Length: 303
Ligand code: GLU
Image (cartoon, rainbow, N blue to C red; front, side, top):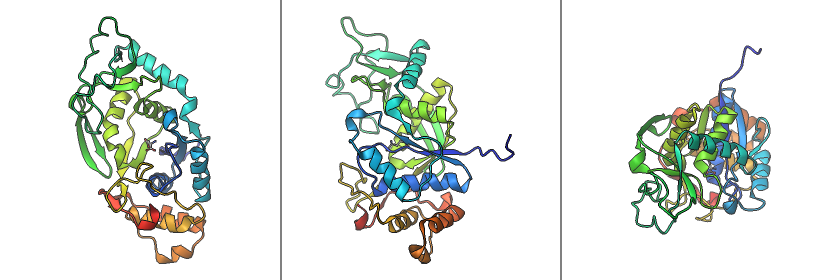
């Protein structure tokens, strides 16, 4: 037995909806350094559970860019598209325990339901006590009750009332695919993830993920949500806002910009350093305490 088994397991979990842009680079850098500074493991998972949103070639391009930037992940890459059995097993358990139920409601039927914080519809509970006569299951939902509290390392204390936040939420969609919330919880639990460092756009999902962890008897990791990178108009960098891919041929300027974005203070001399020197400096000087919590616009060249 090793005397130095590190308890830290972190991960980066990009969705392959396009090439790596500056916003996802920030999440990769933040999670990588937080793990590296604590001598932890850092896992890579491709979140292609939402097959219709996955873009052919995007996963390979993300992996190639990460390698080109000098990221070194531990173990094999996990692909969500190959993990259907594990997700089904978790759903079966929830159903057997009376915690999930079939839902017949169509999107149109829910169109008048109030909006949840993340912009989706808050479920009014129509099928909670059983499917209406003559209707059949389209999706599966989890009963969501109670209040979830957690302390985010960067965003501070959070309190979410599930019923008014999302209501009973979908874990298996009408198209048969498993929902992101379930896949993430099952994958993080199976990999033994202890620390989740990711973009603040996922802060709203965290309460549902903690709720699912509790229902499935999985431990809750420590969460740190990094500030969102926006364009000059204040919009999150994403495929929708046409965020450009980071230049895989010029890792040093992009990594230095990501470090500045994360409130680190790399010395100017690092612009002439090798990738190995840059990572060595960044690991040795990583401070999560200086990461700002507010969203920030990034320099024009990076989006
Ligand atoms: N797949 C998500 C994304 O690319 C990240 C999920 C996570 O880190 O939990 O935005």
